[in-house]
Image (cartoon, rainbow, N blue to C red; front, side):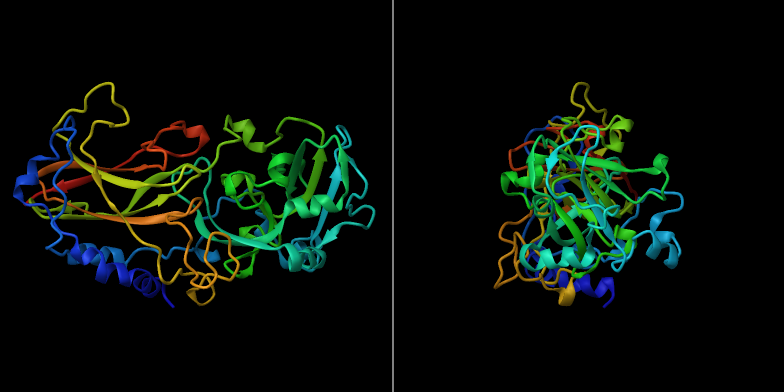
Length: 427
């Protein structure tokens, strides 16, 4: 099925039932976008008037889950590990048949464990043993994968694997274990090694109802392919992508208290969790005076949740006031957060697999919406405006009432900037 067909199925209920009722504000609202200082929002849309343009934009939205081949790729390595010849991949353990995992104590800062897994000693964990653990312990959950320093998600999916703690407990740790270091395949070149780490507390326990950290081997019900980090990668549910190391080969249990992450070298915040923010997907770059403006977009739902998405169109002829860099006094208009789709896209049969965390088994619907660590689509029909040049912005309000980019506006802890795009209105 093509993406456009899936998208139509995803949102047909909403298009027919929900947004056919969304209307436009009359001519009296034309002046409401020209003043930044107004605290009162413009009148609500007239539900008696429909919008074919908005319905069409909703129908063409992207599927909720991303097929493996549609993910954006920010892999590291020269050459990229997933581009290696098949024979080389087999030789270095990047196939399911040849994958091996070391789980050992840090020789310099040892944690006391009784049963290390080591390729050198012939005791490394292989793929068959991991799947055997999965028969009892496997979990699956929905997550949007996002790079800390990129302003849009790489893709969303249902990730499946064995909690990392199950493997660590097999090593029979006893004491002096404070942190877990882990590495991916790096072409046998120390200069290319990509490292990340977690506190042992986060590995052994799942705070705030988060899913567990997993050794992941499936995405959307299919074996994890090499470009996505297969045969096995780490997936940390609440974290940015640099914590979810691809091509996992080695786990080191250490008594060190500090992180060893490669991303620390770039002045990045290593403990930052996914942020909530909004971005647009479709909007008219040029429209006519008085013509309603249909806008769609997505919101990444971080650990702070999502309660609202808001939009605002501002005349470029109006000066922005000083001392309000996050536009807290702007006349923002609430957009509509679209409901959960009927067909989720890149999962078998478009249905959520049984026992997926956060979903109701009998119905396959999310227990809460929007879901944390994922995304939600949104739509708005803005009132028409007079001729001129305008800037369109969107933002989120999280479950604590904090407006984007707060409470963490700093780029090195993940993108949260308020997006701005230009719209020209001319006859």
